[in-house]
Figure 1 (cartoon, rainbow, N blue to C red):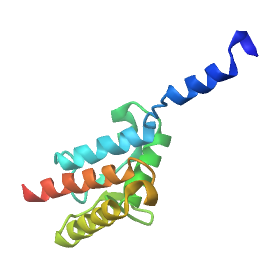
Figure 2 (figure 1 turned 90 degrees about the horizontal axis):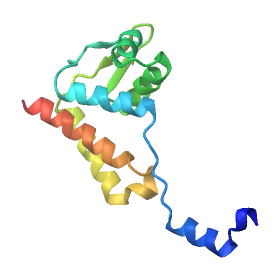
Figure 3 (figure 1 turned 30 degrees about the horizontal axis):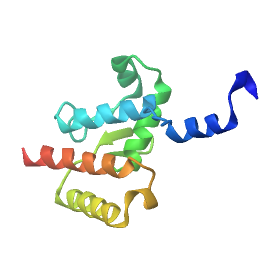
Figure 4 (figure 1 turned 135 degrees about the vertical axis):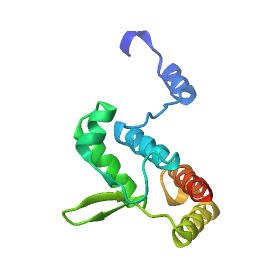
Length: 135
């Protein structure tokens, strides 16, 4: 036994400890970009330039690239081959899809369908998009 710690004590300690997972740098960049879109600081159709975003947030291009992939996967950005990624144009069809997707996730229980916290993020992105269109 290391340093006189009893096995029972370790088990008790492990049962009472909680581990808080911090957001990755890519997730932080993605969340900030979504907030900027929601606030109208990034306009529909605006091109996302890795180097500019990296310089603005004082991070390397790697987490920016990952963040852009996350947002493209979520449908917040769309890409064109050899032309980059752009903020999507939000219309009624896109809003309907976001709301329908959020409803399915909520109905099925987010922890059984997707990783913890993901459903809340999608719903949050949808709410930001809805606010933007409602303005």
